[in-house]
Picture 1 (cartoon, rainbow over the protein chains, first blue to last red):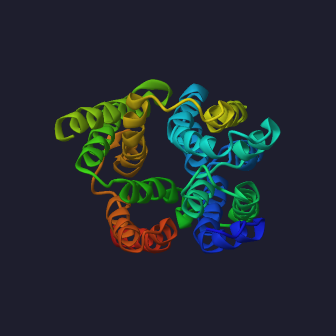
Picture 2: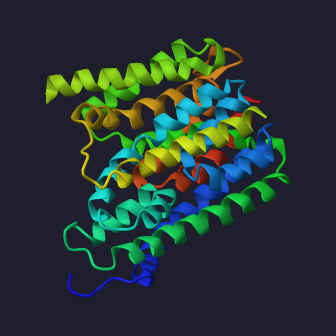
Length: 227
Length: 103
């Protein structure tokens, strides 16, 4: 593209995505409020971790009696996909000051990366990439903080009979349905789920880790077979 | 306290993941095995959280509890709309319906 992108362009490109993020933020907040966990810590995870699925997983693990290291490991595994975004974004930011890169890293999300990568397919010629990225990433960050906070405040008034805890497995099941695109991916999911159920009695919530490891291994083996 | 520790440490670790390759000047490539393994992290972890949450009740497997049909209804909504929000908006009333039928 010949015109230099501005933060407003990044902000605008993100608006339709915000419509999908806002309900997820509210669901996270309301669900956190429906559990027995420390509400302040749940709320703080929105700016300390700032990654929805992993925040929900941490609350699920701790809320069901799992250990801190299980929650941390699960969050790290879920967020390991950011390695890919970081590697790709790194190609664009080679010549940028370290302080700018440090701030870009804090705001890195699936959506901020995808919006930016879609606008700048060529890393060697990307005028205005940094303001564009910040316009998109800050819009996502602000929306997440507002909607998760609102959800936690609102959730305190919702009665137990609404069974909002259901939103945790339902959210992960929905994310799973959207994430499976190949046969090897499907196998990873089936093995991961079944092993996690079989190992559900392991202490510290270790069943989750066992299932995840088995699933990744199964996916890798199938990947090698089918190519 | 356990949740605070988890949130702070997970936050630091997540930041380091995000900063990793951006910090390394983009000169370091993702190792191929890691790249391949990362493809299967999402389906494996998501299933390992979702399935026990849906079918394990009071320590035992129970595939007839109301969560299961409600999740199937919500899952279909997610599949056709590509939206997480739709899964909850459709799945939750389905759960109330199935709970009411069983109850």
